[in-house]
Length: 138
Image (cartoon, rainbow, N blue to C red; front, top):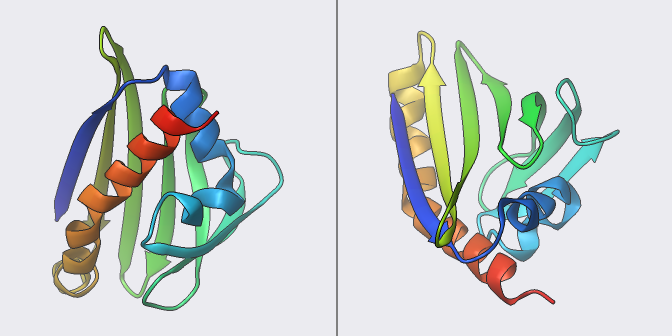
């Protein structure tokens, strides 16, 4: 099960990526995040945690980080892997930002319905918050 949303932000990819790199401040622009942390630098292989606004804290792993282009975070659920992909593409209008969430594994249909439906509802607001932070921060 997979779903995605995208938005165009009138800012350079470097400015948007800087917001991603500041993991502990994700909650400042994403209302679905209560708290987030990273152990070490924002790079492939790093670990951290994320607590959604409604739900338990989860361990996350940064599986792929390509500066100013993309990053992927994964978390394990019982018999399911939840993957969050974030892609930045430079355009004449600024940056096209795509967030994709994928559920894989035996219980993917279950978690896709239970957790995925909530994430899907909040995804447009998360992207709007990112847009506002990137376009209006000094």
